[in-house]
Each structure stands twice: as structure tokens, then as C-alpha cells.
Picture 1 (cartoon, helix red, strand yellow):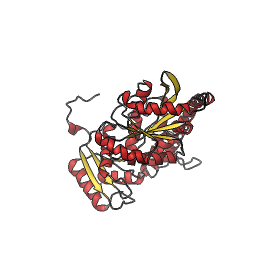
Picture 2: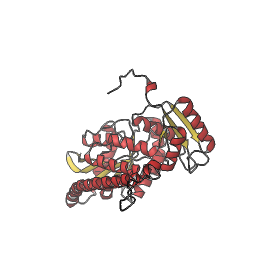
Picture 3: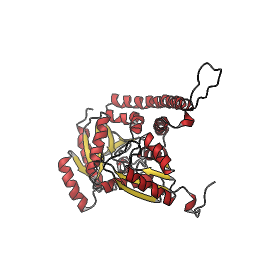
Picture 4: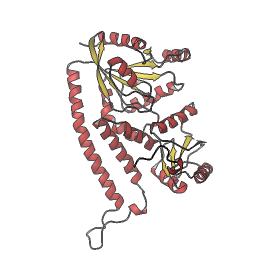
Length: 371
């Protein structure tokens, strides 16, 4: 039954966010990291009641937080009757369990937060399968040391063996589910492989859009191809890879694909699950890295994208596309970046006229491709 809009907020579980500046976090502008965390939470459709900002000189193996900070968080949870705590950083399964028991609240971390956003944003059958696999892997990792009740034997006296523990049974169930999902995913990959094979045989140039999440990739794809891909101011608004024909001067010049956006500390489960989709990057003739120059941390985002591409062993020709360059101050920022990251173009994906520098580049690039 759906709750009416006027339902008292006290009736829902009270949520607190813990934004942490950990010693290993090399972000120069920590406020932007905090803002991104809050944006992730809102992208997941969550409303929170409290936010704590914590700077750590070191992290603890058992609880992540040091003793003093841990007591501060516990006191706020008790005073404000917090029942759910979300951390901006990645926690180990043991840290999650220990914190949950101490705070008497459900605790989850950045990984779970991003997984939930992906779960809500995947719409294609392939995207849903990939997210489901990542969720199962995450759940399996949390099964280790899950508690006494999960370690009880299910066998009885007189049986040949001691029987399975509940934990072993659940782990086996997860592995069975993952294997079935991977089988379904491989069938879908065959279709993608056949499409790619035809493209390669016909020498059709393939361009892929890459970049940090929420930089305007989908907006640009819509502008270049008249596609109708969801584009909104939300992290991971769209996950499903979309490929469209690219026409310049009324003639087909190739195909262009939008890919999932990247983010710092992107859960490895998602990178593994989406490798089949991201394999498209291996076969691309050109990568367009879309960069939001209105974001003061855009250079850090360029580095994050470079690191993930390196992990994926993707080494392709790259054009840096500096987007959202509408204001004079942003044009000044982009000038510094343009001297450092080349080749590049400066555009605003909002209007067709503003993407002309990119179209001109693609027109010249296409002429150099084998026919």
C-alpha cells in the first residue's frame, strides 16, 4: 500500500550520511567529493536526515572509523534515532557488520549505493543481467562470516555427512544463479558479436563516447544522431549502451555508441559485470572523451577515466571533447586544459550549432579512414 504524501516523516527509517575524507583519498577538492556523494544519494532517490563530515588520519581494520570518530557517530545515531547509515567510502564486509551491530542501524557503503543506482537505471535485458550479476557478487562477498545463524548445520544425526551450513547452501544458490545469468548474457553477446563482425567486414567506422558520469554524453549522442536517449542531471541516468548511425552532410559516416559513465571508486563488481558491454571500446576506431568543463574537478575526472581505460586495457585514439563551455570563465579554464589534452574540440552539446567543431573534426577524420 502506497503511503500518502502527508505521511509523517518520523514514520520512515531515519537516514544519516557519513562523508569521509580518508587518508588514501587524493582528491584535491574534498568538497567536490562530498557533493558527488550527496548527488549519488539523491540519484538513488533517497532522502536523508543527517550528514556527518569526518576527516580521518588513519582507518581501522575492524570499524573503518577510529575510536573517537566512531563514538561521535554512535552518539548521533542514538540521539537522532538513526536506523540507516550510508558511508561515502567502500567498506569491507566485516566493517559493515561491526558498524551495524555497534550503531544498531543498517550500514552500507558507496559500492552498495552505486549498485542500487545501477539496478534502477538499467532498462535493457542485457543491462539488467549485468547489474544482477554484480549484485549477486556483492551479496556473496557479504556472506563470509555472516553470523552464527548462518553457520548451523542443516544435516541430521544418522545422515552420511554433517550436512551443509545455511551459509554454504546460500552461497551455492548464488553461484548457481550467477552461472545461469552469465549463460543468458553470453547468448546476448553473440548477437553483439555478429553485429560487430558485420561492421568490421564492411569497414564501418565505429566511434565510442566515454567519460565521467553526467558530463553530457547522452545529450551529445542525441544531438549528433537525433536519438532519443534519456539525458538528465542525474548520475548514471542511463546505463544501456546505445548505438546509432552517424550521418554527416546527409551521408552515413559510421556508427556511434554511448557507454556507461565512469566515477571514482567505481565498484569492481560493476566493471567486471559490464566488461562485455565495455568490450565495444576494444573495437572502436575512435574514442570521444566527453569532459564537463563547468566542473572545477574536470581534470581529476579525466584521470579517473584514464585509469579505468587502463584497467580495461583499452588504448585507442582519443579526442577530448570539452563540453558545457557556455560561460567565459569556463572557456578560460578549458583553454588551459586544451593546451594539455590534445587533440580536442570545445563545444556545448545543447545546440546543433555549438557542436559544429566536433562535426568538422569527425568529417575530416572520416576522410582518413579506409574505405
